[in-house]
Amino acid sequence: MRRLVVNGQVVQGLRTGGRSARIRESVLSAAFIELAESGYADLSVEAVASRAGVNKTTIYRRWQTLEDLLVDALTVGALEIPIPDTGSVEGDLLAVGHELAKLLNDGVGRQIATFVFTAGLRSSELREATRGYFEDQAVRAIPIIVRAIDRGELPTDCDASALLTTFRAPLFYQLVTTGDPIDVELIAQATRVALTAARAGLLAK
Amino acid sequence: MRRLVVNGQVVQGLRTGGRSARIRESVLSAAFIELAESGYADLSVEAVASRAGVNKTTIYRRWQTLEDLLVDALTVGALEIPIPDTGSVEGDLLAVGHELAKLLNDGVGRQIATFVFTAGLRSSELREATRGYFEDQAVRAIPIIVRAIDRGELPTDCDASALLTTFRAPLFYQLVTTGDPIDVELIAQATRVALTAARAGLLAK
Image 1 (cartoon, rainbow over the protein chains, first blue to last red):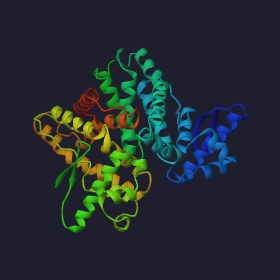
Image 2: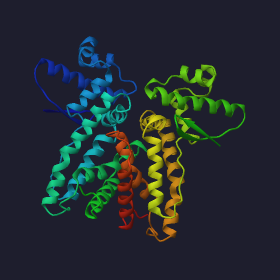
Image 3: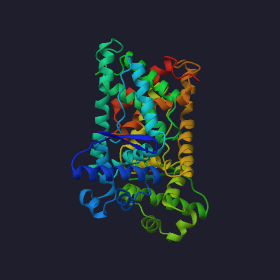
Image 4: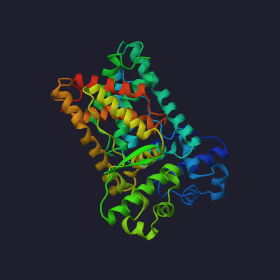
């Protein structure tokens, strides 16, 4: 897996492989760069093909629509953030919030997020891809909660998924409502609210 | 103000007035019905004009794009929900959650919400309209918190906006991630988490 940097943002997880995988990677990379530069509304197969150095037919052979292409990008982990291990659950959640803020506050991450948020409303196929993406992201972060329970920082019956959802929800809510950047105060408040709820037994399995 | 019912859902707040206001109302109503029947992706000025019984030029004279038209729909309160007064803050939040679920779980409300969530990422003008909409909705619900403080149910320095945001965030998060319906368990958990956080002093001004 190599790290792809688009407009100063790390877009991770494009795995390398044979010729077919290389074409896929170059097309997905081109789509991200176009997203970052032109935005989702102006994204076109022509521009993606031109930037990737392939024919439009090469793209249409693999993906019927631009949306299929972007859904595919989700499955290769283009929006994955690193999962921290700082030694405390508070430190880990603050670090996750910081990474989410870096990803979502502007540029390609915000454009992809826009697409992801609405993909599920366009077709049931896209909805399943979106759901799979968010479920994968939730599963990746579960070790944060497992370690916290092991350290005695959280109740043993704490539901990792419920805690992570409670933590992430205010950050995504801000993104889709006011659109203001996710800042350190918001991340700190989301961390405190989620941990307080978990310790009060509100997020038990 | 009259109540407009689209596919069994009450879409409120279209104010009546002179001829110009009547045209505006019929176009906005037509847009909602088209949204409910065809979805946002397939919404067209042609279909809206035809349903409203006006020329396309009548629409383009008032709204440059379909998005401008939908932003305008926001300002007339098309997505407003009733603000309850049940006698307890818990009852009020549960009632608000129930109304949000009715509005967002399917049909026109979900289609409009999709638009609203992404509008802010398309242009700064649309972003301001979206922000204004969410701010208006937050202001409308403040009496719930003021009454709760008066009844001694919440700390006197509780920030109404922070509490309402904490409450709403998990509902909207579910809408944009898994897309699963907002159900009574989710609403009850969001209510408990928000009230616990407020009573722990985490949502103070």
